Image 1: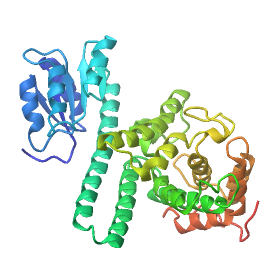
Image 2: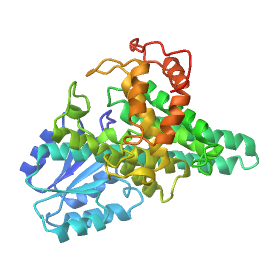
Image 3: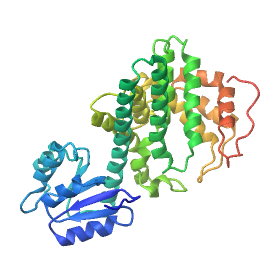
Image 4: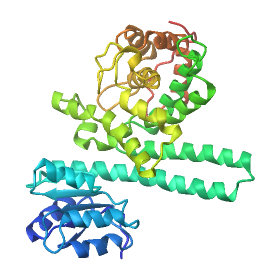
Length: 384
């Protein structure tokens, strides 16, 4: 079988017109292979290299889609391939049955091309994340078996692998957004600086020990991983979003949390160093006064990790040049953060930010974007 750079989709439907429709819709972006019956689809799914995702019709002669899905999920060789049912059946019981069998999604006919494209893109991104974590976990197990006597060296390798895993996952979002990898690095160091400043604060000292600060530092790059599921027309729009577009953009918080959670479920275990990553991805757009999203959480109901990221993310967005806006001077960004205390941000975190604003400016200069020379020199003193 020929290897392809594009993800491979297996489309299964006994109706030639449906096969042609989906193939034409998807073939510009993906490598599409087709099957018109269940037994053949099972053979193609098990063949190397395997498809990355299967679009499966339910109503087929000889073997219906439910049975095909059941066999795929019961075979260790094919159980990890995501299956999306594409069917004319719209009854809730049919959808529930399909999801219970292990399908990841359910699209009704006649299909909507934008919905098909969005669902395929989202589930391929989730599968890539799950594959990445699974491969890293398998590697770790082999390393532990081989090097049980090399305790110190093993610890160093595990730390390195965690860092690589986080950055590899974060790059999924980075490659689709107009923000750069330096945005990820800057916000990572902003969060660490805030946590270090607050670790002796009575409200935070029990949480912000050295271990948890290290976990926050590792997890911060994943705050926008959910953007892999946002359409390019919205994510890369060089102007203000419409209310409808903004509602779609807001879903990146849910997609991010779900992608990390789905990866953990695929592993069959909770990954300790991703605990904060889920909190940050899901809640970094919440606001102290309850006006944020996705849940409208208020005050200390917002996870501390997300409250720290909110300050870091907004500061960096303000001082960074984007296609839709120029970079803002450091002093103006500081003023906006100060004004947001008690409404957008946790007041104690803002106070910590004001005390180390010079550190933020130094991080911004150290990891400045190559083409972002609009960041004005920050004052040589710190303080609010």
